[in-house]
Image (tube, rainbow, N blue to C red; front, side, top):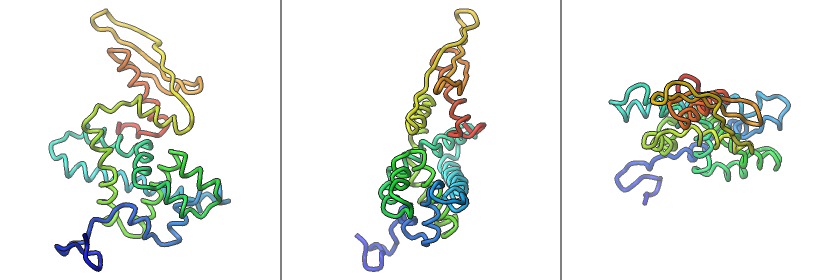
Length: 240
């Protein structure tokens, strides 16, 4: 329990959460961060520019936390963990967990249909989260944003470290937000029985989005899903 003025009995202020920062944003920045691109004539007046900035702030905050907390981890582990933690699907999960849906419905300065779309569409929900991060960076600076941001994504980092990242599941999460599904097909086999190699493709709406090769069908499908995620921009190419 805190004392008057927000101080704990020990004299320290309680940790600031990501939503605390969002609620304290200046009105102009909050308005831009919550403005749907289709609700304005000039897209630069929407959340897109702040989303671009917030994406970079998020990547740095998570990378810095990983570098600090995993001093013995090789670069490959750090890069793979970061790529998963800051992926679009992860942004949507974190946005839901911190209560961003309700925040959008209460604060977004757009009509009801656009508020509903931003709060229900998981891709847009993640975009708005990054836009608000960008706005908080502009308003309060990196030092104020970094720790609350890394804390909010700590669960996604922990999951990535404790589990083999499942690119097929990540792809399905990303496609589900758009009402789409992925279809996998083995298109080739090569090599002797003891060193068999399989090639699989993944298609969406009949169009090939990824192709991968592996020593098992499962591995070839994972490789194909990874390529699809990179094509869709869900994971950064070269960092996954």
